[in-house]
Length: 67
Image 1 (cartoon, rainbow, N blue to C red):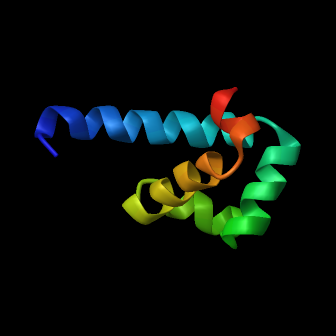
Image 2 (cartoon, rainbow, N blue to C red):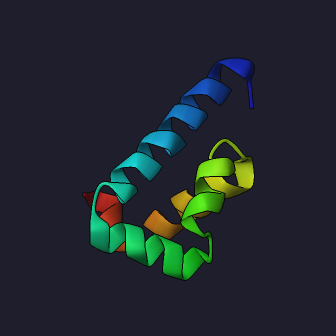
């Protein structure tokens, strides 16, 4: 991925996590389905695997994906 796109991808992933966590039901489902504990999520927020897990979580539910 070209360097200019890396920041964009990171921003999109962080925005997606923020949007997910803003809703209690979605946040609970994210934690339950990914197995990422809230403390671990906070610590590992910038890790590519965590960001990918959050995006994959949204992709798995069409209602969330198109919201």
